[in-house]
Amino acid sequence: MPLITSANYPAIRAAIDTSLDVVALPDATIALDIYAGAAMRDVLARDPLALSRTGDDLARVTAAAVYFAASRLILALPQIRRENYPEQEYVRQEVDIWAHAAELRSLAEAEISLVLDLGDATADRPTMFVAGHGRRGASR
Image 1 (tube, rainbow, N blue to C red):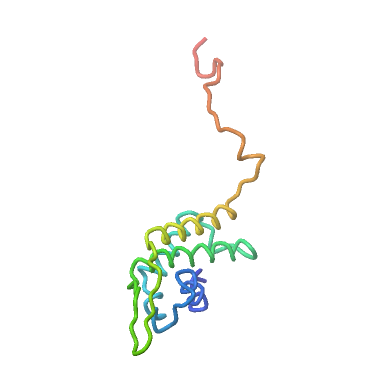
Image 2: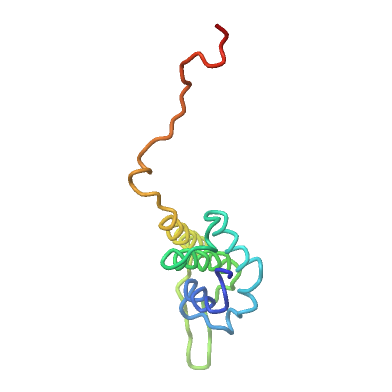
């Protein structure tokens, strides 16, 4: 089963901007391989076992896929800062989309790191290789 389905599309929109709706960001756009598919590949590159996760770990890798998809989509969305209507004007604060995309990727990485946590006992132990002394293979 894929990590991102149409059930996740509202979460992807909300991760970008809570005011986004299906008109501003259609399901068909989110479903494109360059967004949803690439987000799943981002997760699988970091956690090859992501599709077999269950419980909280599945929720975390799914959230990571949502954040990765959102980080890709935010760069493609038009940024509307000002709207004028008769008798009303709406001005929106400018958003640094590159910083927001980086923040979304950081959230995705944090979710994945919680799944892949090796624990304190092994994380603090350095990996070392040394040459062993002995006579194996030497002629006598």
